[in-house]
Length: 303
Image (cartoon, rainbow, N blue to C red; front, top):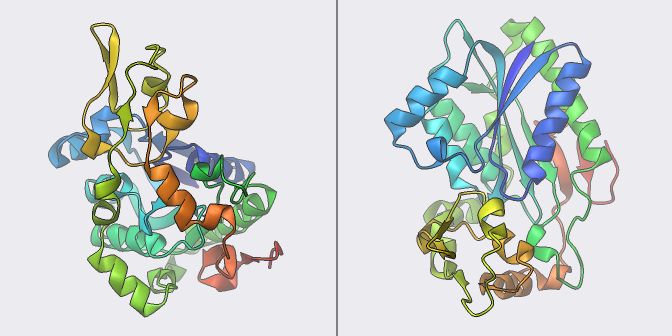
């Protein structure tokens, strides 16, 4: 089996999951290539037609397509959806089997998995299963309680192994391929309806006020190196923000600045919303959907 894993990973945890998937596939004798779109301007900010051309060049023959991103404001982070929209249609070289996966560090993963599954279906791929993985919430680094610290970890890796085994079995018996994306709609109806009205941008838009405190900035360029969408630039001896509205509020610039030169007001909003890290998690913190394939409950048991 040959897989392609497309991933957007602002803080690195979704990429950890992608590497776990890659390792489990290789352990079973398969092959897996990772296409990491993080910091890749050629894909992040290209036109749809340019993205399509690039993806056609990078995506060679494969049996399974994995697509993953973190949950932001209850949604799949929007950059992965833009990439999926530009994917080539499945053909003889590109199998229609697809597996969306998400990482999340909040109280709930909401509609993110459902959104990626829907986007893949629109491109004629068949989401045979979906993977939801608990992950450290990077904005909780300075909360009273760190949220899901050290995740994804061994338990999530075990869940991924179960998912990969199932995908291998499906590749051997393609007559059993079935669209299971209906199982991704596990969030209750009222919340699903609300999030369909409130996009990631509508929820986060007013908080995109990240700025540089000039008197503190040493122009070390650390913010440039860690920003997942390359939204910082160094010109004429100083660091500037390209466009505040492009910010995705990941906080990487703030948490990695040694001079405290980043004004990141959203962190206090997140700290309050997440009760300083003291949150109640959804019942199954990590799971494969349909759930009959396996899940980890909020007590940490792999079932």
